[in-house]
Length: 278
View 1 (cartoon, rainbow, N blue to C red):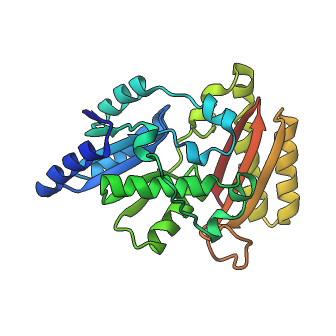
View 2: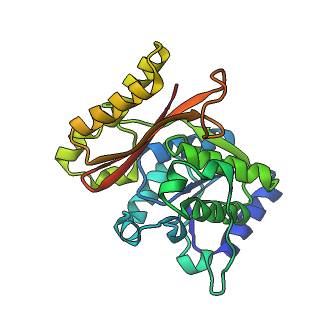
């Protein structure tokens, strides 16, 4: 498995693959890999001739400098894990390779980026959209693989690709969970053992709210009980638990369209997000 650091090296490798007739899949990550990331790489391995996983902690998508500093960096272990699932190349560039001196371009996706995470983390999705566009350009990928755990991010990337006519197919893969229901996330590493035991309460409360809503309970009552249940289990605060149109991420105007319940809450100074179909 190759580990490449520069765009020139990567493009040379991809050009050789495409000359041989291979399709290329890319799995963009920020490292600190877990089974959720590996499931994306396995999906890419099944569907593509060659697979690239990118490891880049993107400073432009962190609106909190402390969060950027605390983000785990485990490249050596990540490479070992990726080799076990047959990834062909890891692209792990330094920051100045992605954002060289004089870089001034910003890509902003409207609509789906505005509510929820967009409202709470100004500039976050601009950073995501900018780096994802650059990674698609660098890798020349035919398919990009993203986890559904970051549901709003997935919709932002899909909108970006549609709007800019990018020649890449976006594949959204199911959220991978621990046996107790907690959605796998690199941030889970920062939970204390006590907090980790409480963390599944978020998913449990979301499932309960979804059941209530499907059974005819008024929406606000179901969501209010979900918030209360999460706080009762020891979470510090709930930023949102909201039911929205799954594709548009806006208010529900047509109950026959797919719906998504999204949540964000703080536990032990760690921000957890999750979502489920309803």
